[in-house]
Image (cartoon, rainbow over all chains, first blue to last red; front, side):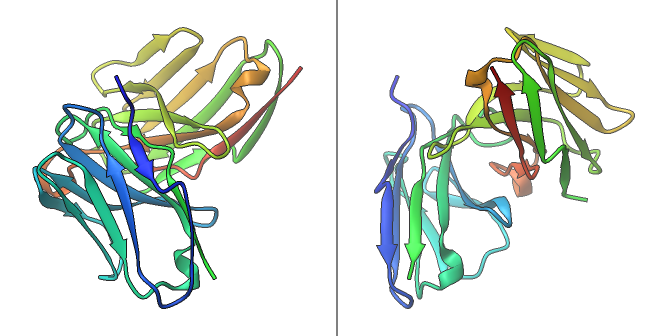
Length: 113
Length: 115
């Protein structure tokens, strides 16, 4: 069974640009959650999608958004990038969200210069 | 109240020894407590998880001990090996539509197992 796939693995962007990251969950999983990981703040929850609907959202500004497609693949978008957005962005796949087993992808390392 | 506090921040253990990492929480509504292992350049990998209806769960060399009254849980790694050297995160979550898909993570413990 294939794991969670995130693309691209690495990105370098300039301040003010926008970026789109992609996540393909484990086959059969319908919930995708996104996290930001930084040395200072650790792992922080961004949002969760299930059946193309955002069901939960963390405390991040509106520049951070996401969506989910009918095949459960998800994208997150960050607009007007700031230096502080540099982080490892992780997505986690689970069967139905809730508080059940979640499996992470390898992440996308975003560097904003 | 949504925090999970993890200690120690770093840990050095000799090969064959026992590694112990502790976590504490305040929110009594938490009802799922997983542990993740992360190697540099990789995403966190689910190691083992427990729910509050049991006090201990063992999978191979990894054991979670759970103390509901103290609101604490810990990860024990028996017979620690150099390949266990990684960062370990505890986490917690609760049910309910407003909490779905959300894990609250501890700050992580960097474990080094010396040969």
